Image (cartoon, rainbow, N blue to C red; front, side, top):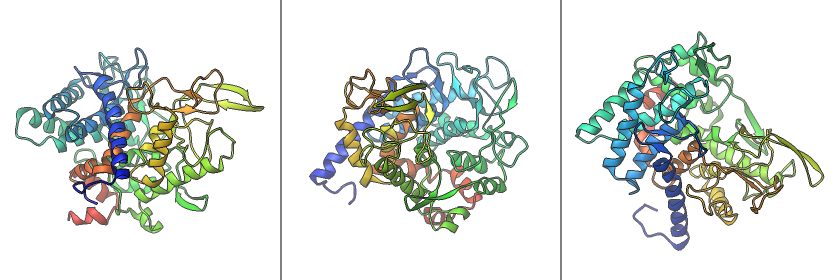
Length: 441
């Protein structure tokens, strides 16, 4: 079926549901923003800082908004330019007023001043997600006018000044981050995780590229597992199987690791979604409401660091933590957005679950789509039939919802980024071949 063909009633209902959900999540980036500098609130709490990863998603969401009629192109370009100007001109250094250093940025920034918040780290992965949005903007805004020309220029400048080689910290693996008080963090990116896009952007750089061997070393730390009779490249939290896919179309392209497994990263994420559903069906810890329609374990908000006896069982609950399946941690908290962001991989199991979350009233009186997370098991004092429900929305939840719905319905973000030289260069240097990547040669 092409997008121009008439929809049958079921397809029309599904399209309307997804368009509505996309619009609600899009609105987060219209309202939870400082329009003067483009910074996006990490979450809807009072006096909360910005997340640079959410800014990268916002820069991608704006161009989707233009394509879907949710935002005028002129307004999107002006908002994008304000954002890029802030990052291009904010202080880069080791002092207290800095927003970043060596092209990287601090994980959280003050919404008003743009300075480092909470003594947080200069984050390699969050900078990569920011840069992915920066590149999206540069690729999209191609019209011959002053505003869009400056967007393209600043996009190139911001990417070129990131010193990916420095972030290796003398290793063959990229470091998680750096602090001016103590230097590089002790952790490096190893094991399959959301850093796939980080390595690809570092490889694709024309100014500070890392060596291809760094990617090879990273893949040597992968774990291939069989879970519920499904073989896949293991990662517990669902967001790991989505984050790099927001921007990169991995369908039919393979690196050496995936060629050896006769799979690709897109197929791997499809399997991960099915494993998450199977985990909910088997429900080994006996959490309430886990079933084929109610699943989605990932990094998310939670009821808090509390131990409570519920229906005769002592349960340990968590605050915000990277929950995972099938090996945990898991406290009965599910994230509807993480299921929605699996839409391109497994629409046959995702669409029924989206309808189920609708029936649980997880969008009622709620401006930004689904609630971030809920715990049917933690129902002490709860008035909602879904049990405990997070009172907050998060930018890094709303972004994947908008972007992956669009990848599913229109292939637009993926189509745009397939033309982006930084990513195609990074993919080739990482050893990817096949599919659309070979067709560009």
